[in-house]
Length: 227
Image 1 (spheres, rainbow, N blue to C red):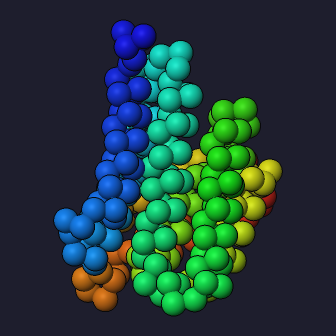
Image 2 (cartoon, rainbow, N blue to C red):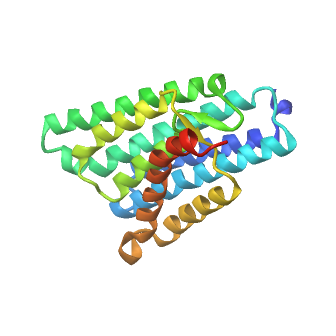
């Protein structure tokens, strides 16, 4: 069975490993709270980059028969489970004082988990060449973890999950970014990992704004400007 694995498949496994370590960092007592959040965020963002490289490699040299299934399973770890644990860890000190707040946050994360499962399970059934049907899981993940990393009030997490989840499970068309946009997004992710919240948090703020522009402007572009 191992013999059928391609390079792209190995990258998918590495993607899952990064997501797994992002969870372990938060659960261990080895790192101080703020540094654990930063390391976990960096691992999730790195997994996103690996996921992108995985797709490029698969298109260039091909993938195995299990490549699509392996990719979805890996993304489940790094794009859904790890971000959910990340958000819980970020807000745990705020919601622990109230069972209602705690339930509110957990309910939001369960919703995100459910939407994420639906999205990843249906991706290859709904797959099209030039567009994404529903907002891509990486974009949804970035929006949520950036909201958490920037410590937006936890009360906004549930509305954000509902909106993002609805977009993930929707039939709304989103454009597939070209090479230039992907390169720009990659740079923003790298700068966020390197700069953290330095310089007034400019890197994570720009990353969040960039993805929001895509989430709002993408369907408009498809509707009125795409040929």
